[in-house]
Length: 391
Image (cartoon, rainbow, N blue to C red; front, side, top):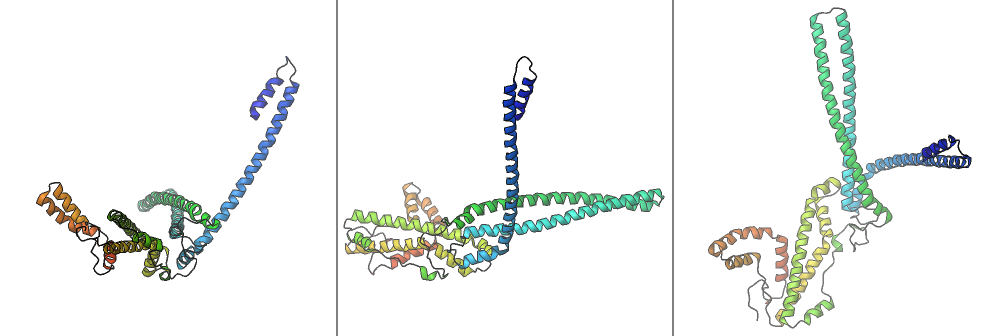
């Protein structure tokens, strides 16, 4: 914009046919104003760059201080059961530990890279000396053996130089990848864990009903499930078979759904065992299992509550002189489906062959829980899994 105004001013000054003094003065004023604005903007930019460099240095110092106490911090988070406001949740601890390990790898890689660069400098110095010795040897007419030894030495140094340069290039690419990955981890930690933690809005992994106590004794915090008065009254008011069957099947399906969720949660928790012990150096198998039980307590309470509802419904069936609904196992359903589709004996045999596989796919924990509520009913209560005909 300034260049365009300057060109316009020169064109008007060269025009002798008319007087452009006022226009030239206006353009000169605009040019001076824009130059001042540009100078101020450049000064602000330099100030911003200086502040940015200062903040980057402070950030680097802060990260170095954090790396020193990171292991002690994550162990303290485990000791406090990840509940205090200052503690990260397990996922944040895993990410911080990975960032710490990556920093250790980056520092060791930088030292190795410096060693290879030093070897390369020594190699180039040796080459210069060998070339100087070769020149002096030729000028003094040495023996052919001495010339051959110097040539072989130079060839060895050149080969070593190529290898060192290739190794330096490889290590440099690895270091570049480590730095980029570490920066991504830092950004992820700041955005998802440190910033919510410092602002008091860390709700990503904190349970809604987390106890306020800092005691790590989780066994004392397990609630005892029970039926409320309204729930028991709603069951006692059921008199029609259709309504009872609908409530029974709905409760049973809910129980199975929560059991599947619990099985998946247990599998996911067990898959983090190796990462858990790599992150928390003061942990143990007992503490790992203890925290897993505590983190899945809501699902276990829901399962226990559903079992109580099924038990109360079974008692209500007995009071009305009715049998509990028939619940077919997956094996029986597959056999009946094979017979309906015309599979005959071959289909039944194939189902029988698949029976151990089907049973092995079911969670032992689910079967144990299902048996527990069935056996906990009063003596004489019909087995809901038995094929008893409805009254």
